Amino acid sequence: MVMERVLLNWVTGEVFDFADDPSQEKANSVRGSLSVSQELVDGLDIKESLTEFLKRCRSQRRPEEAWRAACEIGLASQLFPEAWEGSHRTKTGASRGLTQEQMAFLLRYSSRQWANFERGEARIPQDLLDKICIVLGMNSQERWLLYRLVLQRDPLPYSMPHEPKDVDPMWETLVRLQPFPCYIADSSWNSLVVNRSYRETFPSTGSSHLGDNIARWVLLEEEAEEYLYDWRDSWAKPLLMQVRSAFHLDPDNQNLRDLVRDCADSSRMRTLWAWQNMHDVVHSDGEVRAIIHPKSGITEVKILAATPFHLHHLGYRFVAIVPTHLAAASDGHLADLFQC
Image (cartoon, rainbow, N blue to C red; front, side):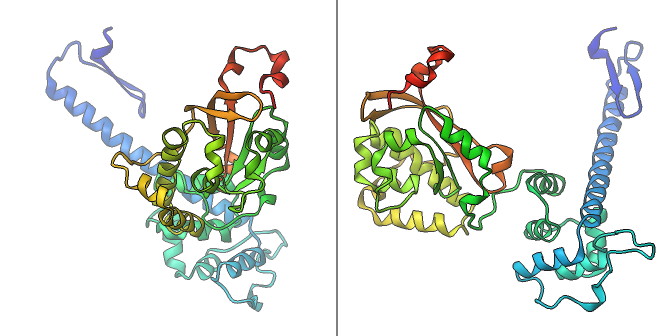
């Protein structure tokens, strides 16, 4: 049987063979019905998944925990309602979590509106999604799933500031064990974890009056040119485009706003910002550049940038500056590859 003449409706399991009926009318009719079936199935799957997901999250959230979370973001007063005392327990003592009515009250919607949201009968407003995540105490994976179910896209990182303690200790250990420059930074390029090799390769970063901000050091610290080969074209221009992209994606981020303002106040940055080929660049992963190492001199490196799932919801990124000759070396000589 020729593949082009067979159409399988995976929804019903029925096979349509056009070998005996070459008419386009039948083919178009069947293909049209499959398209409609696919849309219906996809729609039902998303609605049902959203409903089950939100019900599960509610059932696992104690009312007092949800209330405290709502207080932290200004959705509730500090006085816990007396009527809610013990409301998460059924008559038999079993836990039932947060009710639909309580969820609606905390989010300042009517019970009917929340019920429609939960059943997928009304679209949840985008600006409500993170409030739902906070009130229900969702972790990064649950937040990601909520955004995928409602908006069919990944969420942006939280724009609120986070302390370095939010970085998992094992990620800190992984960074510090690397033999080449490596760091974890937030969405505003504030460095949260850097290893010894990074400090030794770029010694002025630790004493800079600009603080531990990667972008500020590269763009605004004149000493950076002593360590970054072809500073203007290979380092400053691409990073400035990344900063611009980040600000476009998260214009309410005050750290990014301050960074953009300070770049605009810098005469050499204003010149680069006005560069006619300026365009948005999201990341530098995979780019090959060169640094001027204090001991090794000019060294070609590749930028490896990644955002592991655990760090994504915080807006953190993992970056390694790896000498390109490392790829040809044996595993037994990793410690000696970068002469730091």
